[in-house]
Length: 512
Image (cartoon, rainbow, N blue to C red; front, side, top):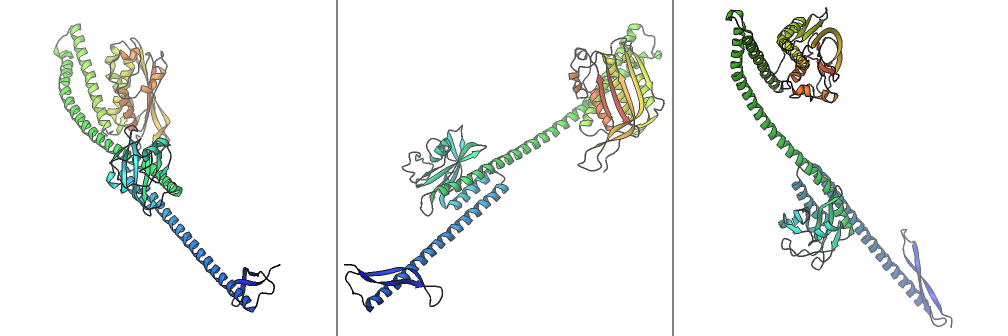
């Protein structure tokens, strides 16, 4: 028998009053012919309306549930972003690794809503993990040592992998240790890396809502640990810098103390040495005077040797004291108008005895326009004396020492006008003085040692000569204090030429 039935509209109210929206069909089927009536039609219509209303309410509730879930997820995401932004502020503001780690474990607990979190670092050559910072349940365990092969954190470090444990008591990777709370049920750990090397682990335990940890939680803790590693490197660098600054300050204080002792020693020793030396030199000169009586040749040689070596020793003492003053910043130049020709002649006379002992001759060429310069006559005389003495020392017997001086414009360094600027070269009217010896010369590899304190060129000839290695260093300092420059040229086996340049009008003083 073919079934016949009544079809009723299944509908729900639409957004426009009086208008129904078709959402489906509601059908009633009868198993015999001509069985439906108006009552059956009304019943079918009422049932259809009821089903439509129920369905609409269910859909509305579903939409509200989904919306609430979306809002909650957005709020959670915003909270996570706010906490991660706060982490950025922490990384920039903390000044010690301890402060950083304490802040981070608190933030990790808030971020993941856990009952405890911890950061552990590898110590003792990788055999242990030290719980350097803990929050919540782990706070009391701070500074505890965990065997690296008997903990979830140790497994993470050894395998360089993140992990989640839903039952720590039954997890074969974990062993109960008395330093940690016994009520840790769920945990997760991520590696903590610095420059690609695993240095520890960041861990979280027991979510407050009781649910298990998931991959999203691992990703959050992983992002936090990456930032922690960067911040830890920065904090460690700051700590090292501050420690180095403290050590440097302490060394500077010690250096000041030692320098003061050195200055006091030099002052005392100079007095103790100069007093007898002056007596020795003075009495030697007195005995050499004709008024003191007739001396035989041997007696005169002895007295001249005493006087010569006494003056040499006095010069060495003066050099040491001058260097000490320069290093302490107490050396100044007293500028006056100086006839350079007189200074040259005086230095040549002062070094006569050195050349006479080796039967050396001296050649002097001074330009006719070489007149007056602005300089410290004592220091210029000292420069000339040191260079002439050096030339005589390295010139063999019967050799020649040559001195020339000319006036010429030369580019010379001028102090910067303002702080932070570099000095510049300016062409200035100057005198160029050169002193040449006919000695063994200087090897190319030894040229860089010239003008360095306590440095002497390393050749067999120089090792046989006396000297402290201060003369050239002092010459450089004195020349530069006048705004000039100094240098040397040499061919090994062909002698050496030392030269210096001084501005005619003296040094240009730096403003202020």
